[in-house]
Image 1 (spheres, protein in one colour):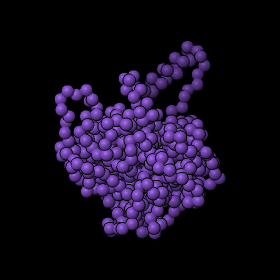
Image 2 (cartoon, protein in one colour):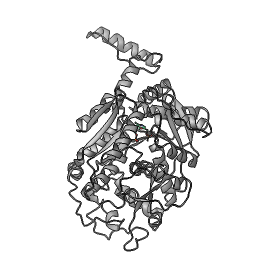
Image 3 (cartoon, rainbow, N blue to C red):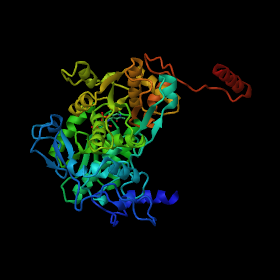
Amino acid sequence: MASSHLLNSSSFLSKSNSASPHHHRYPCPTILCAATPSITSPPVLPPSAPPPGLSFSAKYVPFNSISTNTPTAESYSLDDVVYRSRDGGLLDVQHDMDALKQYDGHYWKTLFDSRVGTTKWPYGSGVWSKKEWVLPEIDDEDIVSAFEGNSNLFWAERFGKKILGMNDLWVKHCGISHTGSFKDLGMTVLVSQVNRLRKMNSPLVGVGCASTGDTSAALSAYCAAAGIPSIVFLPANKISMAQLVQPIANGAFVLSIDTDFDGCMKLIRQITTELPIYLANSLNSLRLEGQKTAAIEILQQFDWEVPDWVIVPGGNLGNIYAFYKGFKMCQELGLVDRIPRLVCAQARNANPLFQYYNSGWKEFSPVTAKTTFASAIQIGDPVSIDRAVYALKKSNGIVEEATEEELMDAMALADSTGMFICPHTGVALSALMKLRGNGIIGPNDRTVVVSTAHGLKFTQAKIDYHSGAIGEMECRYSNPPVSVKADFGLVMDELKKFLSERR
Ligand SMILES: Cc1ncc(COP(=O)(O)O)c(C=O)c1O
Ligand SMILES: N[C@@H](CCOP(=O)(O)O)C(=O)O
C-alpha cells in the first residue's frame, strides 16, 4: 500500500520512469504485462500483434468536415497553436482510425483493462490508460498527470429504488478527482501538450482560460505541477468560494472581472490572439480528447456493456460532445456494438440548448444567463453549441431543463441517500426524474448520471437550502440541525421526538 502510494506520487512529480525501456509508441505485450512485473511465464500477447513500425497519430480538422462527413484538405498538426478552422468554425481532433483499426476490439479492451490501477507511468491515469486514443504522439516524460480518471461508478441503489423505482441507476462521480471536477480529464491532456510545446521552444508564455470555477481550478493545478504560468478570467462574484480559492492557492494570475462567464470568454479569446497565451477552454478541442475517456471508462466499468442512457449537465457544451466521441470511438473500433442515448440537462436559468432543442433545432439564440445555484453552468452563449447538437442528433438524444427548486430538491434527495453531489448533478438528476415521470426512461433502463463536480465545492448552496434561507423555495427536504441546551433531559426529549417521528 505505502510503496504503491510512493510510486504514484513520485511519478506525478518527477516522471522518474520516463526513460523506461517499456516506453513505446504503440501498445505492446510489455505494457500489457505492466501490472504484473514479476512474471515467470511468457507475456500474454495481444490478440493481434502490431505490424512492426506501425504508430498512431492525430491531427486537427474542421469540425464541420466531420459533422457533414465531407473530406477536407484542411488539417493542422497538434503541435500547431490553432483553435479555429479557416472559416472560423470549430476544430476537432481526428485520429488515424485506419491505424487504430489494425487492432480489434478485443485487443483494445484487454489493453485498457490491463492498465487499470497500474503504477507504470503514465498508464495508471484513467486518461493516459487510453493514450493511443488520446494524444498518441506525446512522449511519456512530457505528460503532466495527477492520476485523474478511474472515478467511482456508483450504484445509486437507494435513490434509484426509493425515488424512481429504478434498479439500474448509476452515478459516475467525475468530481471525485484531483481538483474536484471532470475538468481534470481534459486539462491533463492540454497542459501536457503545452509542456511538450514549451520543450520544443514554442514561444508560449502561459496558459489562460475563462471560467465558472472548475476549468480554472484544473488549469491552475496542472500548470503549477508543471511550472507553467496560468492566467484565469473569472466572472466577479459568480463562482463559489471553494472554486475561487483553488487558482489562488495554486499561484495562478487571477483576474476577477466585472462581467459574466460569456463576457470573460470573449475577453480570453481576444487576449489569446494578441499574446502567446495558450487557450485552455474547451473551444480548444484537445481538452475533449481527455474528457471523452470518461465515456470509455463507463463502458469498461460495465465490463464493456452499453448503458441505455447517459445524462450529462451542459454549460459550454464541450462535455456532451466528448461523451459522444468516446462512445462512438468504442463502437467504431469494435469494443461495443452500439452507443447509449445521451441526455443533456440544463438549468432553466441558463438554457440556450434546451430552447434550441424545443424549437425543433430551428433557430439558435444565445441567452443572457441568469443566476443559478448550478453556477458552473451559468452560460448563455456556449462555444460548443454545434458539437452538442451533433452529439445529440447522432445519439437520438434529448435535452431537458430544471428549475432552481427542482435542481436543489434533487440534490438534497440524492444527498439524503448517501451522495454529496453538486447542483449541476442535481440538474442532471432532475432531468432523469422528468424522463422517468413521463415514461421515456423505463424502470429497467440502465442509466448513468454524470456527476461533474464534488459537492464540497458548493457547500454554500447546501447551507442555504438546509437553513431554508432561499427566497421563494420551499426547501422541502431540508434537514437543519436542532439546537439544544447541554442538559440530559432536553437532549433525551429531542431524541425521543426524533425517534418517534421515524417509526
Ligand atoms: C461542474 C460542471 N458541470 C457541468 C459543466 C458543463 O460542462 P460543459 O461546459 O462541457 O457543458 C461544467 C462546466 O461548464 C461544470 O463545471
Ligand atoms: N464550467 C466551466 C465553463 C467553461 O467551460 P470549458 O469546458 O469551455 O472550459 C468552468 O468551470 O469554467
